[in-house]
Image 1: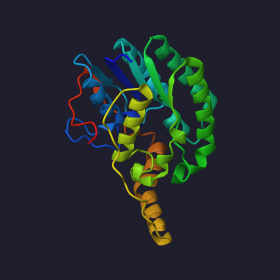
Image 2: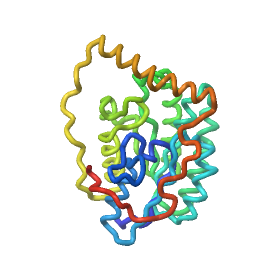
Image 3: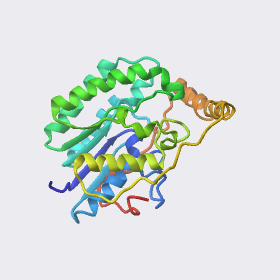
Image 4: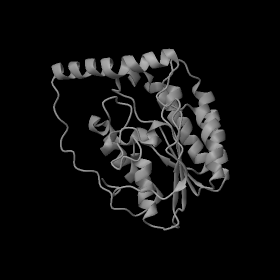
Length: 260
């Protein structure tokens, strides 16, 4: 297959890379998309990468703030994950959110770029968000239909069983950990047919957690994540407010080896 030369990543914290600290110190986070870009850059001296994703962004914000900028960069590869921040609101019209997504994906696909999309991860056992599992399942079925109808590249996050291991997640249980981001980079490269040397370290067997330890973990999670998160939502505050995209223009990634 031909090498990709202009890769633009759009979306929210999933694509910004939250949970995967940037070892170079250039930005707060690295993430799976930077790792993918580093592999693609090694294949061509003419490669450029932009990442417009910002944590906390909802569907309408991604459409309004990122899509035109993405298309102006003339990408031949676009990755986009959007909608999760809409689905975790107290009330949401899933069909309306996905209609907007469909229109956005149509614009991206019509540009001639290869477009990669995801279903949402399974929220089973996800604490505060476990009760929203049915909502996410409906969203996923609609996204699968769009991907098939528009001939998009689909990664079915919901069915990636390795993400049932809590070590693939940060403590907040929303953002992937370093191994989670590395595994996602591998999934993207594999589905695109791009050769690479990335490997997820063997995490070994999952640790056995006693009921008492589990209760303490859940108490800590509620205290350090759930309550502050709910407070921000009540006040209409997002952790992404005022943040610029980390790579607004095409450039060559300057990172460490993509498997580290």
